[in-house]
Amino acid sequence: MQLEQRHYDVSIVGGGMAGGSLALELQQLGLSVVLLEKFQQNTPVTSSPEQVIALSWGTVQHLKKLNVWKDIEQLGVSVLRDVHVSQATRRASVELLHDEEGVDSLGFVVQNQFVVQALYKNLAGKVDIICPAEVVAMSDTGAGKRLLVQTSDTQFEIESSLVVGADGTYSQIRHMAGILSQGWDHNRFALVASVIPENPHRHVAYECFRADGPLAFLPLDSERFSIVWTLKPSDATRMQQASEMVFLSRLNMVMGEPLKEKIGRISASSKTRLFPLELRVSKQYSTPHLALVGNAARTLHPMAGQGMNISMRDVADLSACVQAGLNQNQQAGDARVLAAYAAGRKKDQRRTVALTEGLNLLFNHKNPALHCLNQGGLRLLSHLSFLRHQVSKQAAGLV
Ligand SMILES: Cc1cc2nc3c(=O)[nH]c(=O)nc-3n(C[C@H](O)[C@H](O)[C@H](O)COP(=O)(O)OP(=O)(O)OC[C@H]3O[C@@H](n4cnc5c(N)ncnc54)[C@H](O)[C@@H]3O)c2cc1C
Image 1 (cartoon, rainbow, N blue to C red):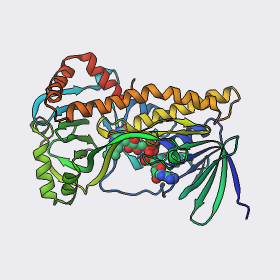
Image 2 (image 1 turned 180 degrees about the vertical axis):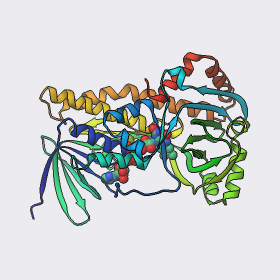
Image 3 (image 1 turned 90 degrees about the horizontal axis):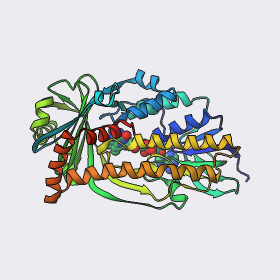
Image 4 (image 1 turned 60 degrees about the vertical axis):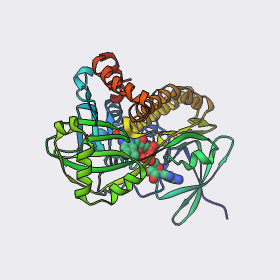
């Protein structure tokens, strides 16, 4: 039986924050775009705990340009004015301040589902969204790629000049394209929960470095923080299974005095959720007629809050390269377009991976030499405004 064939300029596989933003951006260039997503996305859900993300000033500017920020704001955002960095066992601390960077805020804290909901609202009627759907096979046509797509009740083929893998850390498209990835398991879990502190957060985020990894508090709404607590796998499981009383007593104990002086004791917590932490970096950003964006291109430790922010820079760069190609009558999947994209992403990727993994090594290592260095590092950061600016700028997406 002959399968139905559909044709688009671009097929994007994975309709999360990276895939959704790219679809919006490319359709605004006048391209026909299809978005294939494995799970039902556009259904408002209330999750406990809320999964939140700190978006840098740079990412927010980009979402404003795409015209979706107003919808995200309507669903609910929390301003992230300053960041306070400390160590659980030492007095040294550093403040990254928005006014030192000449911006109104270092960023915003938003629920992931609000970003996705706002993107889907803006994609409606402009991009074909096929969901739930999965790619069963991928082949070359010479002029592009052919995808064999499976939905709940049918199979069909899609041909396009460019396929984009935006399908997350364990990208199936990356695997089908034969692109290898490298990295390591951090042997840690991020435990996420929403908590109520004694004192108001005043829109300050707190990151406390501990021997097992960082414990971050992100201002969520008027009275709550969302926490990301890095734990060894066995401790993470124990904390997830603990009663609220045991959980709170452990959290209040490990957060350290400098942080407790700022926000007071934590008095209540939501349910918890665990995420395994790893570094995974794809060896290539593109192959003929195919590109990777977002977590499919690289997955970072969340400690520096850079994963989504670098993903948005992938989206902006790929769309700029496609636009430049269209101006020269080149198709979206033209080899020159994809070579420019891959070359352009290398520097940002190197810098962001180095920042995230460097901080992780400096603050979490048990090696005594590195322990001395991290104490010195925090002091150095507090006294050298140039260094502090560099970290703040990277956090705010200003570099
Ligand atoms: C605890 C935690 C805290 C974080 N905090 C921050 C932060 O503060 N700031 C920041 O910038 N980043 C943060 N991140 C990272 C950020 O969440 C990710 O970088 C971002 O979600 C990547 O978006 P994505 O669209 O590339 O991938 P995903 O969000 O993983 O989306 C991938 C999409 O593809 C779909 N999919 C998967 N497989 C298939 C398939 N075979 N076919 C079709 N569709 C498929 C999935 O259903 C999903 O919708 C954090 C991450 C964690 C775990």
